[in-house]
Length: 207
Image (tube, rainbow, N blue to C red; front, top):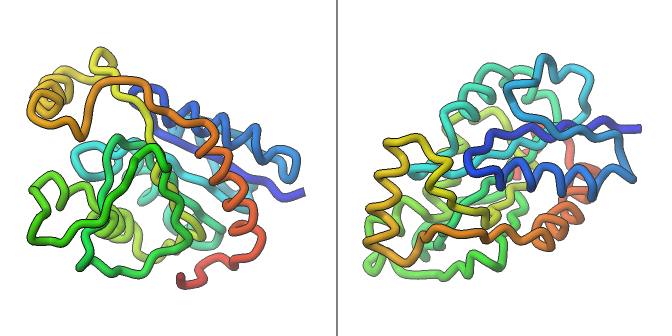
């Protein structure tokens, strides 16, 4: 039986919950574990790795970046998928970068806008912007699937600096607000897509 590791960083807890939902949705087809990145000692025994992180300040967390870079040579030889928890994403029409199979949580109500109408926030919360971020972290890793999933914002769980910043953000825009937005059905829907991607794509195959 194939072995799958779901590893994540989490801030408000939603990314960890997504990892648990993925594990429960996929454990009938493979041997799967879900654990924080800090608990990972080796990836050698796994056939595939699914990496999850909150999107914060326009990118995934520094802990997730360090994990990917530290394990990049191992990950390059395996099937890899990414999932990101967030509150807002937009598609900018002029950004036309190739993507692996992509799942966008319907709760994010993503719209497509022309660049001329994009605000500074839109430009740092677009599919193209996020895609450039994870590609630059480890260009040699070609994920077989990527999911953008709506999570939660709990200001009390944020470090002081991030909490103050997000208080300003939530006061200035309705695009990101404090609350519980995790949609388990969307996570399970991506799990179905992910099973197909992990079963059909070869490691390192360009998308």
